[in-house]
Length: 159
Image (cartoon, rainbow, N blue to C red; front, side, top):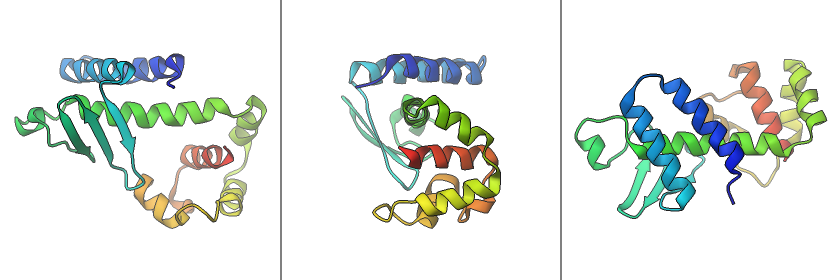
C-alpha cells in the first residue's frame, strides 16, 4: 500500500525540480497518476534499473527507455519519471518509518562513525556492500560517498 502523503510530497518535489519543462511535468503527472491507480507498477533492481509494467507492455528503464516516446527522441517519458518517483518514494518511506530520535541521531553522526556503523550493520544475507554501492551510486567504497549518501545508507539498513 502506498503512503499517499509521502508519495504526493515526492511528486511535488519532482515537479518543482522539473521547473518549467512541460514535457517532464506531463511525464511526472502521468507516472504519478498511473502508479496511484495501479495501471503502472515499478519494480526496482539492485543494478539501478527498473521494470515498468503498464497496460501497454513492459519497459526496462536504466536512464533510457525503449518506449515509443523514447524511440521518437523524447527523453521525457512517463516510464523514466516513474522509476525516479518510485526510487525517491521508497527512500522517503523508509526514512519516515524510522523513529524520529534515530533519524536525528544519524543526522549528527560523524562521517567516520557512519562508515564503521554501515560496515558493522551490513546484513550478511544481503548482496555484498561493494556490489550494492556500485549498483546504486557508481562507487565501490563508502569513503567515496558524500555525507548525505552515507546517512541514507545508514538509515536504510536500520530498518
